[in-house]
Image 1 (spheres, rainbow, N blue to C red):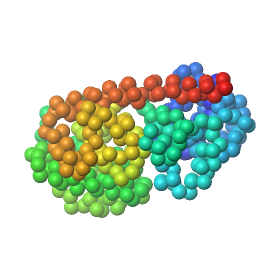
Image 2: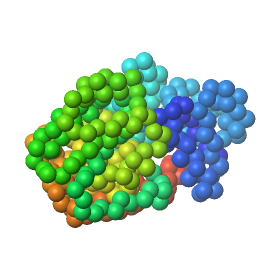
Image 3: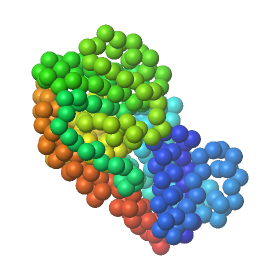
Image 4: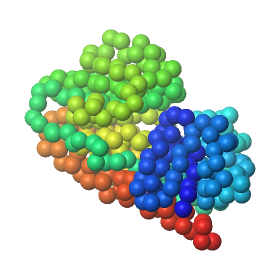
Length: 312
């Protein structure tokens, strides 16, 4: 079986397509990842492929091949210019997949298959949670949208209250780049919390391994892949109830999804003061990634769709 995987040139969909091609080839399926226009139009592989699997809006068929469309985010909210192409692509696709029930329902994709995002969990080393007077907190985000970027400012504001309630020295590392990063940096000046902005890092694994707790706060999102990376690193997560957070995190067991800012502060304070709780939550989080969100667990779901398409 030959599968042509098409994606944008960067971001989450690019990484998803690259890793899907890697894992498919390990399962004896010949997969090719294309993410630039010229190879897309002229690659001989696409003529020979049995299936086209796209994370971009294809609204016509190449060589009458079956098309699987994977919708990774809220394309109407985040990329309004793509609204019409995606509506046509959804209508044209033979099969649609999406990473979460949240997105399936929000976009009214009644027939979509829900296949969550995945990572190679074996690539991540678990944090060794030890009793310490210094607590390193971390978040990873894309500063491409103003309102999502200001979610980081909400975390900083909450940490001001947290610091008043603990004698631990807390530091906050913010990983990510984008047009609104400078806005957040300027707004964060004067905070009593030591803050480090790293800028964009292609692989935040090293920063995660130096941390104790992963924090997140955003007004909208679908399936933050960094949740999986933090969980694979053995970090407990604290996030507001955004997007598919409750499909990823078993709140109270592999992290926490507080419903209010007061609860958010209280949970962070509890995690800071309780090393064994951090270790327990981090261990459970790692296990959940290995059993629910590892590529080796996820790829059979894609293969079943491919096989079904070709046998119909």
